Length: 211
Image 1 (cartoon, helix red, strand yellow):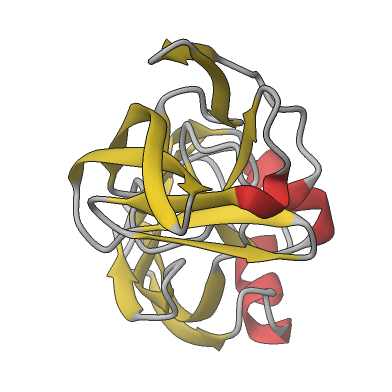
Image 2 (cartoon, rainbow, N blue to C red):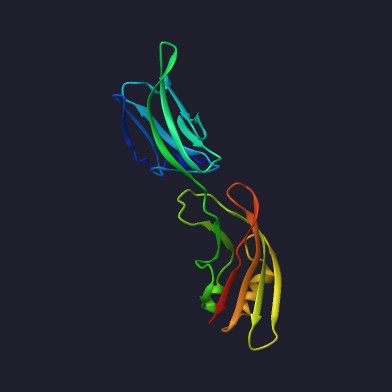
């Protein structure tokens, strides 16, 4: 978890429970994501943080570098519960419910596009393929290990297929793209890489129709 990730502006939501003012907040409002550390801010009026015990009923809460974080491996509802010590016993002083959601699947792109009609000059100018997670504000880099590029020319028997290791276009890929023209179909397929959990996966193919 990067420092930048932790210092995102936090929207505080105040909950009143048993006459105790508490705050439990994260930068995603009421949403946590499965399988990663989700930073949260916890405070209780009139109680020092050292006296607070934070637990969860669908995951774990840990503290490091002055921040709390919540992690769950299950999708569904999770409650963050705040306790304070009273005469050696834990007394609940508040809780708040959140939703735990799966992280969206990464979407491969070449330049700004996921496929469809594209000007030949635009496609020729690209230098790499990447994968983004749509509607996901946390900055995680998705690793692309390899892909196959195919070029099909409809007015002839021309067909070219090349393998590219890594996300950056190699010399053969760049040369092949430099020869495309209007009417060609360019396909990026067998796109393999690692998702946000470090698991190897195959991404959907990209099909471009050049004009």
